[in-house]
Every structure is written in C-alpha cells, then in structure tokens.
Figure 1 (tube, rainbow, N blue to C red):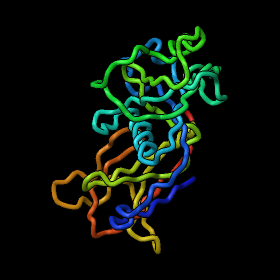
Figure 2 (figure 1 turned 30 degrees about the vertical axis):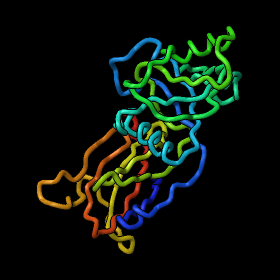
Figure 3 (figure 1 turned 90 degrees about the vertical axis):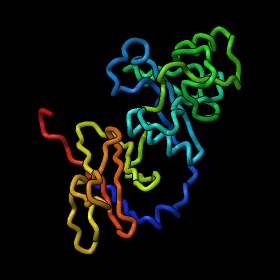
Length: 240
C-alpha cells in the first residue's frame, strides 16, 4: 500500500501559495464519453503549462475526465511552434509517434462560444505544418471537445482547492492495476482512517461528498475543524 497525505484546514488552504512549475498534459477527447469514436480517439497532443492557476485547472480537467466546469472554458488556446520538440507526440496511438510541431506557449482557456478555428484534429495541424501553410506563432485551438484528459508523469499527490464553501480533493496519478481510495481522519496522533463517505456533513441534510469525476470529489467541511486526508493506493485483485 502507498499513501499520499494531505493536511487540510480552512486557514491553511486559504493562505496557500501556488508554486511555479511546468507541467505537461495530454489533450484529446475525454475517454469517459463513449459517444465519441473515430479520429478523436486516435489523436492527441502534449500541452505544457507553466502558470500555476492554469495548471490547477488542467489537473482538475484531468481528474474529472474533462468535465470540470470552470466557467465553460475547457479548450486550450496555444501558440504553435513549427518543428518537433521531442515531447509533443500522439500518445493516443500505441507507437506514440512524434508530431512535427509543438506548443510553444499556452495562451488561455476557451470554450464553444469563442471564435472557431479551422482545425478539428491534431493531424490536420501536422498536415499544414508539413505543407508549409502554418508558421511559428499561429494561435490555435481545436474544434469539438478536445480538452485535457491526463497529466504526463503525474505526481503521487492529493491536491485540493477551496471552491466557495466546499473543498475539492483530486489527483492525476494513474498507475495500472491500482485502486485509489481517499480516506480521512481528524487526528494524526492516533489516526482512525475512514472512507470519504463516512465524513460528517457540516449541517443536517447536507450530502457528505459529491463525485465530480474518476479522480475528484467535492467535500463540504466544517470550517472550524481540521481534517487530514490521504490517497491510498492498493493493487487491484487478480481478475479485475
């Protein structure tokens, strides 16, 4: 069993600072939506992001299979870099071939209401890079529902944000043949770890937690209490 520990209190969470880093994400069609088949399921590209708030949103999208609302903006708008960088590849295919282009800069998140761009799939960008009709610095996004679906080399870490009065707990780690469980306790001196569905609601008739996606939960907590959370990893039983 492996665990990732997270200590949460309202004061600590409100005062936490976002750390600068560069994180890499897979952009494709959400695999949780089985209504999509065809080119969407065999096309993907790698998106580097270095702004802390945008990394938080990207990780929430990855944790919720692209379903985190975030004001309706889920599609990344980026600056095109012509030429491969050794990182951008089509990870949706078994061979994971490199693209002849890369994301030189993430610009911002956009949605269905933004002006449409001419490309629907990453292979179309590849085609126009190779034929010379796309140049460095072109701003691009993809039509449809291309969004962040996973983090590249995700950390073994349980993340949290405060969304109005509720905590959102989420992770992007993804190990094969592994079951993830979020547990909580109110003391580390003599911890009694319990499943998330046993956490006491802050008021009567309040749902203890809401599942936002495969790797994300919204938890209403009493701001006067401290809670300790951990992400437990267990090997899946044989045959599952």
